[in-house]
Amino acid sequence: MKLRAGGHSIEITHADKVLFPKGKITKEELARYYAKVARLMIPLIKDRPISMKRYPKGIKQGGFFQKNAPETLPSFVKTTSVSRKEKGAARMILCNNVATLIWLANQNCIAPHIWLSRIDKPDIPDRLIFDLDPPARKGISAVIEGALILRQFLEKELKLKAFVNTTGSRGVHVMVPIKREYGFKEVRAFAKAAAEELTSRHPKLFTHEVRKNKRGGKIYLDIMRNGYGQTVVAPFAVRPKEGAPIALPLSWSQLKKLSSADAFTLRSFSMRTNPWAGMNRAVHSLKPALKNLHKM
DNA sequence: GCGGCGA
DNA sequence: TCGCCGCAACGCGAC
DNA sequence: GTCGCG
Ligand SMILES: [Mn+2]
Ligand SMILES: [Mn+2]
Image (tube, rainbow, N blue to C red; front, top):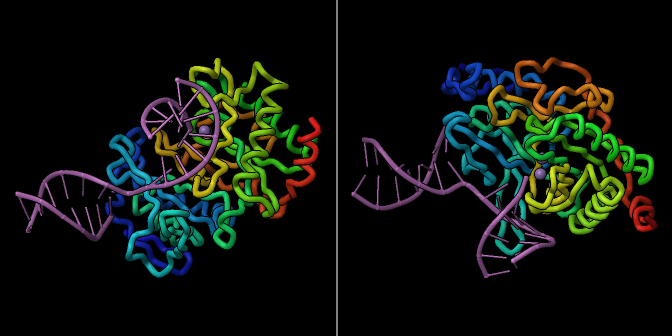
């Protein structure tokens, strides 16, 4: 079958192939979901290199990350050349239009992952992420509490603006749009200092220990995604888990009412206003934040 | 999903 | 002509 | 240098 979108017709092969056994969610349903969310999703992922997390045989069989763009692509799929530093260059896909998003679904790309920088300044991130990873047996309420504390800290004390999304797994992501004036190393150092300050204030809630067996049942404040060439799951992406949970942007008041981190799915999603719509205009400089953080 | 490669 | 295979990579800190 | 981590 074919899907028509953005002035293109995209072939969906094996449309009835079941990618998510529970609930028999097919490739066609995945493609239609992405067609539906494209208007909200594209502005948030435009001009960022993507890695594809693909599952040609469904989520029960393993999947793989694909970073390099295939040699031959439809003309509507845009690509960019990125430096791999010492190891030359690589061509990567940009998901800049709805047709590309649907084409990715046909490639069995369940979850696009994006860079935290844009192609015109790949070394300079315009987003900073805090990844809140709770231990296996910790309720959602602690994660919500942690995210709200982090938000309060970022916005009230560091004068930044914070956005939150579910991950479709157990934790949440807190995303901070930043002015493009520092490289990844400096931004990560800032994130680390912030994570350490929060851990010292709330030692029973947070940890920044990389080692799992040293986390003591606390929420891991993971800042290591803030690096060159690192990726994070795209907002609105579907996760390769039974039920097809999605990484859904929420308002802070929606977060307070969240019942579980995988509460929203490809099927339960309904069109609404985008809580992240203002992200691209909510950019703040890290400069005053750095100054304030240093005084603590 | 698809190209490459060894049989 | 087939079946099989690969399809990312980075940085930090602990050892 | 290698391993755990995501
Ligand atoms: Mn996480
Ligand atoms: Mn993490």
